[in-house]
Length: 579
Image 1 (tube, rainbow, N blue to C red):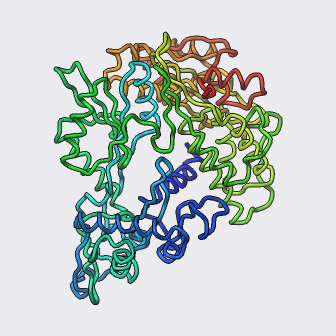
Image 2 (image 1 turned 120 degrees about the vertical axis):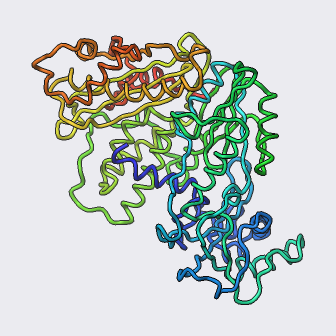
Image 3 (image 1 turned 90 degrees about the horizontal axis):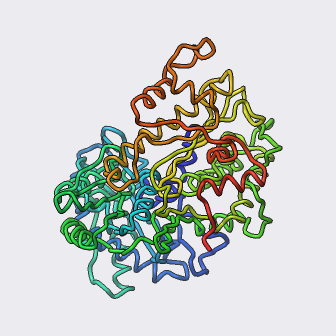
């Protein structure tokens, strides 16, 4: 997503901070605004903070559970310090605390300071697969369209299950493992001896722990092997999706994996029970039942419809930045005021705060709120040096979210359930820079959006036809992946994938150019890579159909719109309030 990628990754690390391998000693999980150690709900920053706050008993209990889990799993064993032959100092640990937003549980994690690890010494491969946001929405769309079950599992202390290949030693600091365990034991009166660490000992890791750079990958590979051993297959389109066919292929069960969160999609209750029983032989599971929240996204089921909302996330964000009492506006971006680069350099603190807020906006955009895509991308362009104008534009976006806080993506079974898309471009609009146009697309399934983008084109288009043609090529790239995904899920058997997939565009010249391979003097300069569009059209994979601009659901991804046009855009997008 170009300039937004860094901000998005930064946000993911905040959300998954307990799994992150890049915590510094001073970092902590996001603190509810204005809370102090004397307040209920305060999240302590480290061990000393935890044992001195008003809810110390709850945090001690959480730490007790974490230590018990590590010892039960054989996560590390005590060894003499002189047994460390690696010439590497043992990694130090720290406590990370948090309160689970979905059920209010107090959580403690003993995390390694993995930022001190050295590549090819302490770790090798680190890439770990996680579910794509589009795959999650596809699961929800299928569940709504076919009235299937959507079930949620959580794997307890996931990272502590995977064996570690490298020899890594850890310090067991006083009051955190050895002394901390004894203090927990005496204060909670639950155990008499939790951590048998005496004298000058260090720990040799036997399993991965939170904070190590290789932990996510080793955990994914362990879960991957477990799923394959019970008859699942990994699909090519998304390696976080696994499928299993039952009853001679007439019944299917699909599994979506995001670290330790597992989503099950199937028409059969019996298949769910059988899967849980099989996976329980490998891991300690928490059965959360029918999904109500996944990765911070609320899943609302009303009859045969499924809605996706991030009201809780938006509410918390607005409170964090003091925008909860601001005046709502009807659009996320001022169509009459293009953003211009700053003339003075912002301070590091100003840049950090701006990037933090834009990162959260982008996470929201990627997950459920395609309506803010154009505004979010424009704000992200100035993340390195924000000005007062950019600050005001960001606050306007917060005000828009306040007014649309109840808006959800809705999926349902209707006559437009099959995959179809819309694409558009704004040729050198008033908000473009250096003559570069903006492309936009959205794909819908079961009446709701599953994939969308607002993206600056890579070259200067010499005409509106050319810019629309480039936008069509971008949309067809996404269509190609979605077709692969739905095909591997056998959704053509259920009417959710019909070829050719229709993509709606509002430029007849660009449509003709895609369908007609003849040589044209005005288009001979267009990069060859965009002409794969013709190949996809001629193969029957996709087809382009004209649609009037007023019915173009991708219009709001390419430029800012006025209030009337924007209301039409969000309606066409498939966003509606949860009433």
